Length: 188
Image (cartoon, rainbow, N blue to C red):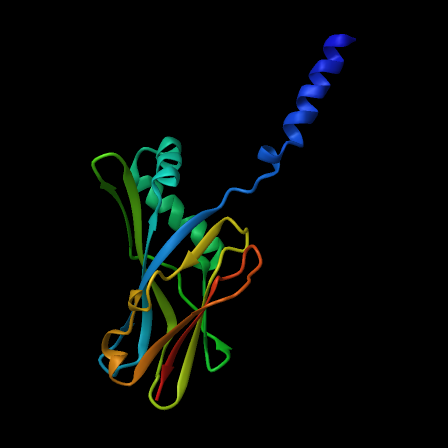
């Protein structure tokens, strides 16, 4: 009976300890380039994010083959809408499935990072000529990843820079699973 009680106590302590209740969070710094067609219409977002060294180690322990891991990540991200939603003048834009992606291992002296780059194509090109505003929301509804732009320059406008500008502001507060920034591209 003593063994059963001590085993129960151990399990209870493990299940309800702060460590067990802690939610795993990781930062995903973003770089995005807006892609356009020959008419200047927005056609896709080219997105890159860098996984930190701890998460890189965890992911590579699970799957050592980077090519297979990349395919698994893209398939999983599709179910999560690639952590990306974009609205044009308040109306949501629809994306097609990602087929162009690359996961690479970047080795440093004492650690390594995985860098994922993918092209998120719009289902239909959209014109940004005239007064238009694109609102970006990069968020993980599971509240694990915190996606953000380190600098406004990490959202590149490409050919749209002649008539559009980037506006990124930090939110004073945000809930788990919400984007920590308000991200806009304002065109004239």
